[in-house]
Amino acid sequence: MEQPKVSIIVPVYKAEKYLKRCLNSLKSQTIGDIEIILVNDGSPDISPKICDDEAKKDSRIKVIHKKNEGAGLARNAGLAQARGKYIGFVDSDDEAAPDMFESLYLAAEKYNADFVMLGVCFVGGNVFKEKNASKKNVYFDKITLFETKEEIKELILGTFGSLPDYSEDSRYGMGVWKNLFRNDVIKNNNLRFLSEREIFSEDTLFILDYLNHTKRAVGLPGVFYKYHRNEASVSKGYEPNRLEKTLILIGEVEKRASENIQKSEYKIYLDRMTQAFIRVLCSQEIMYARSNKTGYTKLKKMLKEICKNERVTASLKDYPWYKLPLKQAVFAFSVKYKLYFLQILLVILRSKEG
Image 1 (cartoon, rainbow, N blue to C red):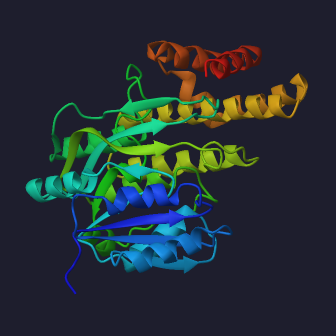
Image 2: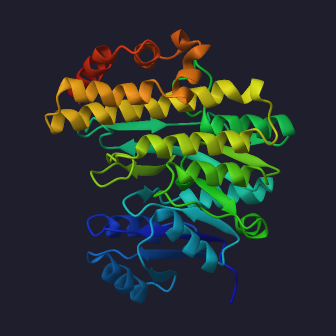
């Protein structure tokens, strides 16, 4: 059987509302020689039936049924059976532009690249539940090559962070779903996802592990991926142990960064990443307290636990927070100086913008 050009892996869990929309975007790809691997992660709704029905209609669709273990391990199950020269990842509630995978594939072939990136449009609300919001992140204004050791280092740093004066917390984005990976690089180095039940942003760690084996990468201009935020998304949910999981993530990112990069170079990027996650944690804590009518004393105690954490205070100790975009700068100021009432006010005002 001839090797597909691209294997597209889609973890599926409680996706009955969105799955057909996602699959229609994949079946309509202008590159025909693909396989679409749907990994039913023990979904309790009718998603498994949709997967099986779609596979009967289209020979490019393969279905894996497994017990529920989370998206990271579902992707691993897909990787174990993927036959394509390249690997792409799509979330079951998202959409890919018709020419997305053809654009990724052609760039990978033309430039003999291990890793190809493109832009994304975020649709829907974030932690503040804005309605009908959308935002386009165009990471490259022209075709950009990363070939030298210094350029690959820049890519690694820009994956998990950015410099203070950059508008986004990550220069090149942390999600795997806007990238193309070489299957042989993944298999030869036994690269796998961790479980998001143990750590936040398993995407980031997978990309960093992959970039340690990347010789050439390409960034493409334009937006090809539509990321739909919804109420059930992991990134929006409140979890009691999310501070612990965040600290584990930061430690794992630093562990990977320190392998080939000096601390004097990566620290300012890691500090930006830390502040980004802490901003989200504080915001979630405040929004959760509001929805559950939690008193100020208890909320302040929770915010204090976050803001007085050693890793958090270290990220702001010598950081030029005043160079950040205005709203981020004010929030960083409130964290640095433990101004909890200001944090609450900022989050409430931000929630009303939607």
